[in-house]
Length: 273
Image (cartoon, rainbow, N blue to C red):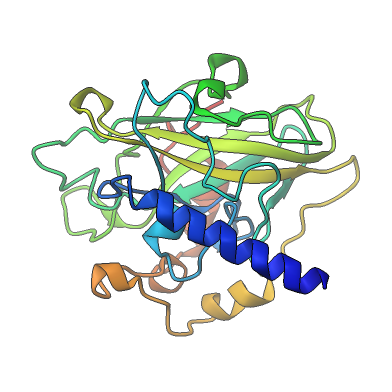
């Protein structure tokens, strides 16, 4: 009975999200590909991760400053929205730095005549019992970690043939507050895309399980994701005519590159706090 109810709720949540998204443009969208990138692999994902990268299930658009009552998270993923099986939340100790990634989707290098992709901020909920960031109005300076950061990290690209660019995701970093209580915390990545030109804003909601002293995040890959990292054929996004690629399978990370990421030498300015 519980399985049937859970399945029904999942279907309703997805259907609701698709219906709402039909009224919102998604033509300048991006989301978090990974919320805990370590050792050349991903160990954390945003809520409701879709392995096929279907835009209508990944990108949540907000109209802008006037849309104060808009949900901060994708419909059905608010109030402890579930992570899909095989794509768990990030796990970290207080004070630990998490590396997150997202695709530039041509907005950093080819989005003419709009070359400025805007900035993003990261917002942290101190509560471990419920979401406290529910609407756009709740995305405030009081719960923001550090400062705004440029969407363009200066080197990322989907294609990688542009001068000074490499075919890789864009990088960002956040540090878990040192006083964070053990438990599950809501986090919101809020991208203000070219807001001055009337474009939409986008959010990605994810969770961080803050660990107790002595606990370790672990580095074992979830079963569903492990197979993709072993070079299996990636799942393409039908909406992009198979031009979309799975960075987990398409990128090659050298030992030096992994070390540079761990040391913060890749896109060093992309640290929110």
